[in-house]
Image (cartoon, rainbow, N blue to C red; front, top):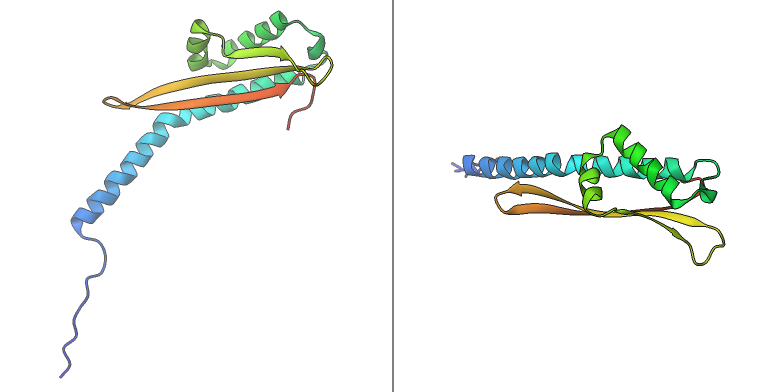
Length: 135
């Protein structure tokens, strides 16, 4: 007569609770930082739209900044508007290597509170050359 030992299969209740807790933390993080990444995607598409406007490279920096403000108001970019009130994250500058080429650059940070004194710090950067088609 053979005695077969039955090995445990599956997870225990505590293991399932730990797995569920980790899953909830990951989902919570995604729900918190997801909107910031969606807004950055809107910023990139806004900058690409401005860079592809006809004769944009001959326009002044003031005109480019007014276009940026118009796009931000239309798209409701509230996080970026709060940052812009303190310091303008956009910068228009002339490239050193190319003649008469301007670049539009954005660089900003978003701090998102999570739990207690734990926060996410997201650092976003993007640059486009004005007057060129972006991919």
